[in-house]
Image (cartoon, rainbow, N blue to C red; front, side, top):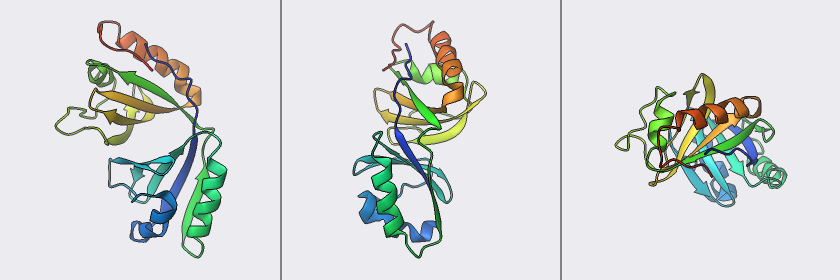
Length: 169
């Protein structure tokens, strides 16, 4: 089963990668390399593109983080946008979670190339999503735009029917 009840705070940060050190202290972590995500102080940071990261925080924490990041980035060319209302999270976990995702995703999620700490923005069942692997179980989180969440949740539930070991959380 797949659930999508979890909302969260989210900030989109656009910044020249050469200036990444300007936010290290504020976030409590380095900005991740391509197709990776890292745990930071009260946040997760997901690589999105060459100069773009998504900072995921507990709901309600985004305002304080925006203020801290704007102070740290003062005088630096950047863009920081609160995109908290854009997405929700679907979770998929279990021994066949990867098989379910592969039914609608062209990205290779095999453990030799996609492991805990990996993330990718791609299409899943024709919907633009960000998939990140949370641990080795494997547990995946799929960040999807709210308007597609019901469709994608139903699609994932249908795709999981043939596998007994898949559960949502």
